[in-house]
Image (cartoon, rainbow, N blue to C red):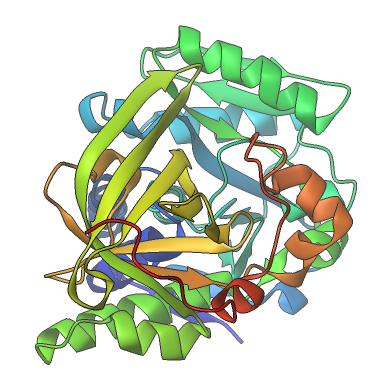
Length: 371
């Protein structure tokens, strides 16, 4: 079953993508404006179609931003990079794309594909490759189904673009990351060209519907003067992690990533406790002050402003900001041995074996460590 997204719906998409993006995927405000501008310019809505309705021989192509989200705050895309990347990939393949895909549920990367779809008239598929956002290109469900990331085209704001072919999806990440750094730390890419049959096997389904529903929940709860945290926990089967204020933050843009840690001091029921929130573009590990994990990648660590209830991205973390952190279970594919090898805590160097949120939530309550 298909549905349409118009300019007035893009705020829902941006809010939902920013929440499910676990702090990553780039500033959703930028992508929302790009999509709304393109829709109004062309006078068209974007059709979102179910994966089952896509022909097996169709060409399906994800388009997305690559790089450090902090760079995108000051180095805004001009709007042509994604179209340049898609066009160059079509030229290389010798055929036009039939459908577009969001590679991840993440702020900017859940909205840019709508801008490209509005310009090209192509429909978007209701799904994505992550069910959240991850920092590296190979960290998609498509890799788990042996779908190649290349040929891939990478384009920048100066008009440069290039085609990459690699022996593996990990090598695609390594090569493309180096090019992205040379392009100024952020670029737009078209990659993982796949058939409709491959898409049906590898894509996580229903993501854009979920993004829209989450965005609507945030909007409706805020209009009712309620913090959306409880409603989102109920809607998504989540877990309340903590409510806390940022008291210190260490953040660097290095190697094409925004890496860092935020020290949090508990508020409300968590008063007297402290937490450490670690990120690499996305929030990946939340620990109590004694080093006990409270949530671990690939499960989702989603952040809301403790006061206003809006999603918080890693680049918007700042001293004094109150956060309400919510954990969501990852798609079962990510909890498999193959999924954990690709995006589990060990890959990022965290000293914890993966434990599901449900298990961590059942751990006995700990006494406050700080007073």
